[in-house]
Length: 234
Image (cartoon, rainbow, N blue to C red; front, side):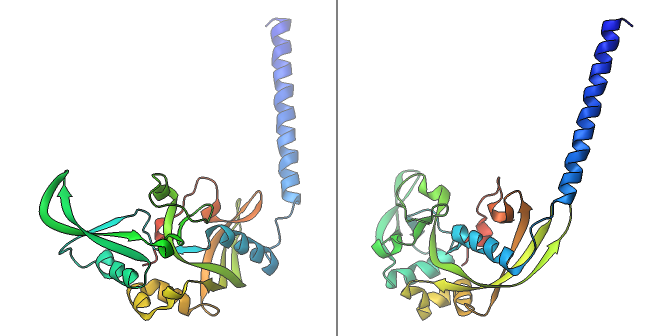
């Protein structure tokens, strides 16, 4: 082996030893750095941050207008949309049904949001109303019937590990338009009705992960999307 080769091997070995030592120091420093305390104040801030971004309860109707063929089988649209029309949230017109661009002898009822309904068609990221006719709207928007705010954090359970996680329970308050409290609305949207009835006493549960920025709701972690199950409260 030449002197040059031996020198290269020695330098490489020294570099590897230095990197290993640096890694050990970083691990020891991480072990000495305590995780944010799991307290009521800590999780109150975490839940509040979550609700500030995801506090709208939506019903899984991102695309408008909605067409319902005459004689359609009983389903959410058949049951719920006429109630929303009675409450002035949507309006409808009867049109000939077209299939593959060809008119048929059948009709359909097309439902569109009214000015009142459009107030509740919001972008899930900005929480601001958007126009349902905008092509990109359906990708991030939904018809959201009420907003939640934090009552108080009631309890939490931390699961330790390389990346600690926690399950947090909390009470909530609701801000909803008057028509959400209509008995007819609550009959056809029972999940929403239960949430409204439980305001102040019932508890919701959210999962959190200890991220570099602190305890973060799993739904807000990078790479996650707004889950349809959580928003489709029908």
